[in-house]
Image (cartoon, rainbow, N blue to C red; front, side, top):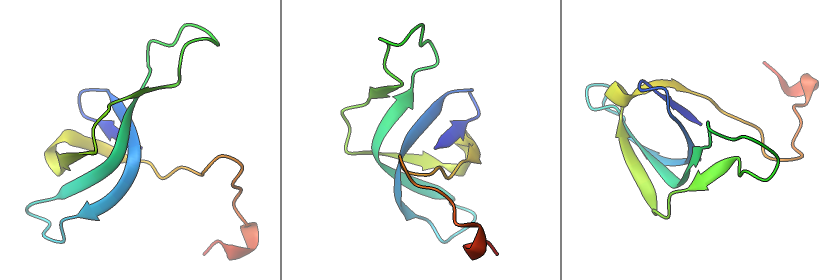
Amino acid sequence: MLHLKDDRRVRGYPTKFSNDSDEGYIYLFNPAWINEERQGEDDPYYIESGAHGYLLNKSEIELIEFTLNEGEVLDPDKRS
């Protein structure tokens, strides 16, 4: 999940990224916006973008959060 500097959040699958730190691009496949306006159980958590992906520059990104898949748990014995 990417936390953008304008306070929006978007989830997706980071499939490509720039190795050049001056460029700092990341391609987010199958993006969906986090629904910050969610009022109740009937409102969706995510708003699908309908796009194949987004190409974002590091200048737009505040934080990259790596989340677990549904049902996935961390194995404490495999932490380094």
